[in-house]
Length: 111
Length: 112
Image (cartoon, each protein chain N blue to C red):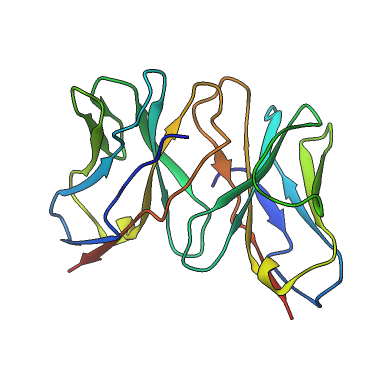
């Protein structure tokens, strides 16, 4: 499986934008880029996914590099409720529940 | 609220015992996966069931086994418990062709 590399931790001030990077230099042409997050004492939850084009939804935006070797999850205005571990995961189509989690990025949000 | 519920929420077992963890998925979710999450680590894929058949397995020994039932419930069974089996066990469900998995809140298993 292609691997992803993320920083161990990041900090942000509340109501500021947050850019969470992910490197995936060995991504294959059919791999989708998925992001999940895990809030304290909860199971992971889906955030967003994309293949080549940038994507937006109510939770976040996903910016994908032209060569697809990296991507960035963007939280436009971080809140205290966004404090979580964010995981960047590569998925072959049709394998939505066979997720290979790394250690993710722990996001701290402060007032 | 994901519609995926797990029971029990916490459990303490003794080394060598057997344990059964349960998961109830949303109606229509014909695929269920189980994960083990050790403290400070990301979840690790144990196995997946699709229409009541095992359909993929991670690097876990045969003493980890599962069942999926037609009523969208499933079980994870672990035999001969070891201390290292202490972890949060997560269940995730989805349907074939979906791009999103829905996780329960997990069962915290402690083996003493």
